[in-house]
Structure formats: structure tokens, C-alpha cells
Length: 76
Image 1 (cartoon, rainbow, N blue to C red):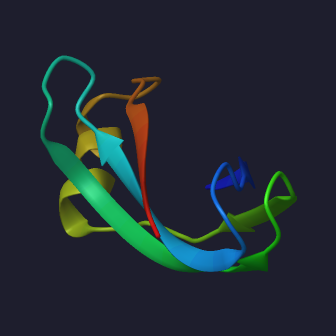
Image 2: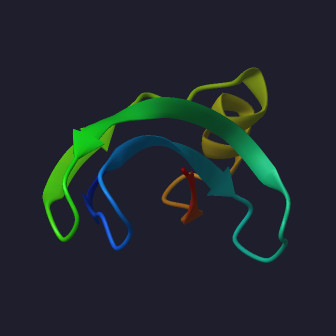
């Protein structure tokens, strides 16, 4: 998963955690985290990571063509 992030604060770095969510629940099947590089205020950067788990693999094995939701949480 990847995303483009805009720094709405002052110059600095942060982190992003990507969650792969069940389609109908707010609990996750897999997650991964990435450090966001140092950027200036109002600058953009992109970052991503690979999320995998036995639970996610089992979900797609038993729900062929199924969909999941994505949630991203950022911290500075």
C-alpha cells in the first residue's frame, strides 16, 4: 500500500501505519508501518509498505473476489 502525504505542520518527519480492515468491522486483518521522510511545511512525500498476515491470506482464500478497507494513521 502507498499514499501521498502533505506536511500540514512545521518541518519534520513522522510515521504512517496502514491498516487492512475487514469490510464490515473496524478491526484489522493486517498492518504495516513506515517512517515518513523529513519534509518542509506544505511539502509532499510518498511512502508505502507491504501488509500481510495469515488472517488476511485466509480471508482472500475463503472470500474470492472479496474486498477490504484501508485506513491510514499518521503521527509526527
